[in-house]
Image (cartoon, rainbow, N blue to C red; front, top):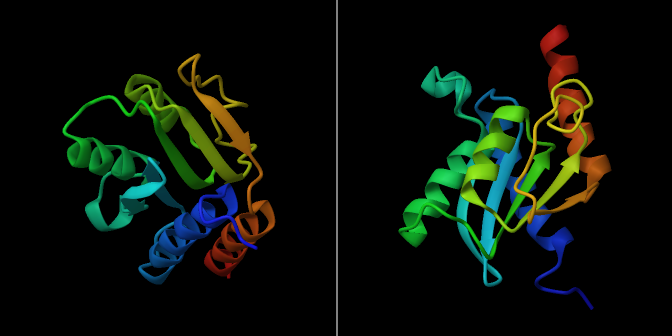
Length: 147
């Protein structure tokens, strides 16, 4: 039996957002924010479409979730994102005081862990959820770009 509120299930929803980014030729990263087991925000990368280097999936999801809640803090919320957040997104997540971050693929070159970014001390981090699928999507996207 599938747990309707599992990290895998919610990461699959974030993955759907990453696929939307892929369709519009954005780096395929997707994110959702969950509060009380309900998806309150969905987002994907829009940096090319908006000509905005800050339009990462996480930033879009933070803004949408904050607007939904009418609050700047995302306490009791979880961000699911297909790729480890960069230091910029980690900073925004820090300030949002989000309770939990779950990510799929590790980003050894630009991820917050290798590059000195920090999350709020009370933020729980779970890595590697659907890692293979998330990493494969990124690998295929950049291989196609290099051709």
